[in-house]
Amino acid sequence: MRNFKVLVTCGPTWVKIDDVRVLSNHSSGEMGHRIAEEFLAKGAQVTIIEGAVTDLWSSSLVKVIKYRFFDELEKSLNLELKKNYDYVIHAAAVSDFQLARPHAGKMDSSKPLTLKLVPAPKLIDTIKKQAPQTVLVGFKLEPDLKVSTIEKETRGLFEKSKCDWVDANSLKGGYKGFIVDRNQQILAKVDSKKKIAKALVKLLMI
Image 1 (cartoon, rainbow, N blue to C red):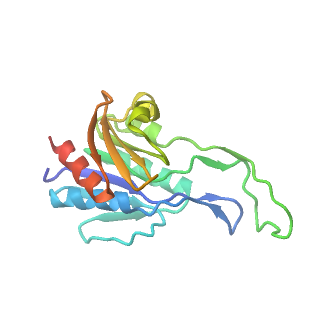
Image 2 (cartoon, rainbow, N blue to C red):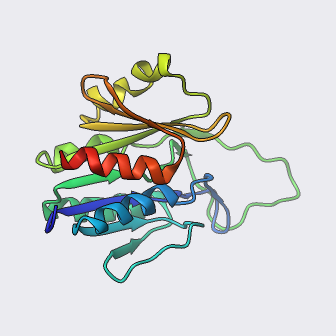
């Protein structure tokens, strides 16, 4: 694994409402950090593109590129994909929606507000187009993911995004993680983010 180049994205992604307000999500960045730790332990060169995380982790051995907003993540990702990474671990919680028209200035908070949201571009769909040689790991989070629904929930990541592996996660009743390959085989099932990170890196090394 030594000298392998790994790019990890992690953390939440903001989209602008007005000049002071944003839409975000609950991602802490922990998943990406645990995966980075496991790759570092194997001697890989790791770069992280990191949002406004609440899981405070750092290493002098890791290059960290910070972002907050969707367009910042997109720009950094496009630049890094030109650098011939062996693995791209796309664990960032990328916004599924953005405002049709963000407001200039600050909106009046004394009046009711209706926001029109439109689908945001799927950044993961662009990764293999820009870096077809990389091994791409995508992530799928569903509140109540079941073994019986994993194939349905992950199909798009394999068929449209061209992922090589998918980490499917469920939060209901405690964390559960499943590593799935292109053949829809479940290769690992664990109950913590640290364990899923360890299992994923171990499988990628085979």
